[in-house]
Structures are given as C-alpha cells and as structure tokens.
Length: 193
Image (cartoon, rainbow, N blue to C red; front, side, top):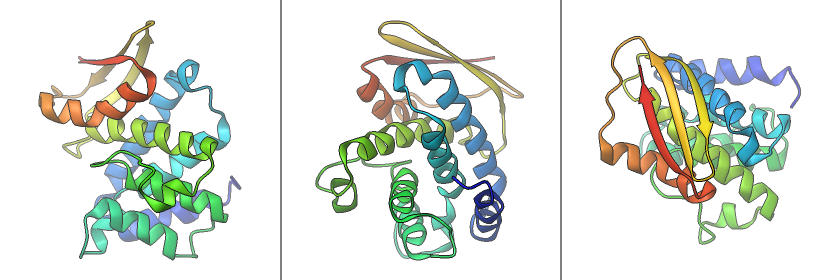
C-alpha cells in the first residue's frame, strides 16, 4: 500500500474509534503475530498491510449505532471513500475488520463469496490473527508488551510478557482462537508472564 495511506487511516481511527489506543495496541499485536507465524501462512508485505489497516479500523463501528459494531465497521469502511483504498483492498480490509468477532468467513456471506480464493485466504488468516490480537487486549489497557510463537507440527504456543496478569476465560479463548486453529490445524496455547 502507498505509505501515505497510514496517516489517513490513523486519523480516521482517532476520529471514529472511541478507544484508538486499543486499536493501536491490537494493530501492534496483530503484526507481531503475523510476523511470528510467517512460516505457517507464507504471506507477504501486501497482506501484512491489509492486516494493519483492518486492525486499525476494526472498532470504528462503535461510532455507528444500529447494528453490531463489527458489521458497522465493515459497512463504514466500504462506504467511506475518504479512506484511500483500491476497490479490492477496501473489501478485504472491511472483511478483516468484520471477522474480528462472531461468525467465521462463510461462502454464504456475499462479499466474502465474491472474492477470489487467494483473497478469501487473506481474509481468513488476517481475521483469525486479528481475533487473537483483540483478545490479548480485551481489557483495553495494553497489558501485553511482547509475544513470540513457537510452532510445532500440531501446536502453536504463544508466549507473551504483560505488565499485569493476563486472565482470559476459557470460553473467550476458545472463541477467539478457534478460527486460527481451524485454518492451521494446530492447537493454540497461550502463556503469559
């Protein structure tokens, strides 16, 4: 993506996200996870940029009441042409934001169905990574400072350091990690010091 896009996206996030600090933290964690899992997903810098944009914009939907915020985020990214995306980029970023919670990408969802298989894979992986990053800042207090992934043939061990104890309920962890587990066929474990 054009480097000039980032100040526009950050300004947009600050304008519409009620907690832009959370979006910045989730973006940082998303990119750490993306980099740590490169050997699994084999995606490059363009996909990393799409994840960056989607993570920065994932919660803007809170400013548009009337529907769940993940869907409102999707709709706002699609509708607002002041966000300088190309058409396919706009759709992919919107869907990454949309799939940060609740349902998984599904061929019954029209926008997702209309993407080509490579674009669908980007949405799935980036959405899965964003779900975990969002979970790691669930309290919106930027607890997690660093993270590393140790990948075995059937497991992903995410180790992180945090400023205070990170407590995540098992059902939340299961919901947030489920998509990545499904995509990679790896069980995910989290350890935070």
